[in-house]
Image 1 (cartoon, rainbow, N blue to C red):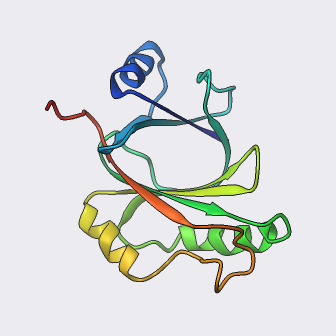
Image 2: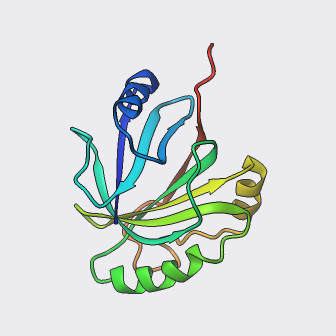
Length: 157
């Protein structure tokens, strides 16, 4: 199974969602950008996007809620260790309603996508320092960072 992601304006991504019969088609947004994500065995519908292999999945993604995307750059030689470790960790995330471990089809970056019912659940998970870092994990090749998004309809200003 592959995961496909792209950025765009919320309005453009919503039109794209309405044009295709893919479910779930996750539209997420924050104050900076909007992102669309979906999973399929077919080729991507996005003209410009990022393609991932879904290595591990837990739960069903919903088109409402709160999502965190943790970006994890991993060294080539560290990939097997990281994948073995994080395939297990994805199954042990408290408070998440769904989780995906995604490996980029182009490069050595991974994304830990997690969906939460409530941002408080994400904050509680974040306080436990669950993500690897370059100082303590030799397989990390750069800065690890997380973006958070609301899922569902964009609020009118």
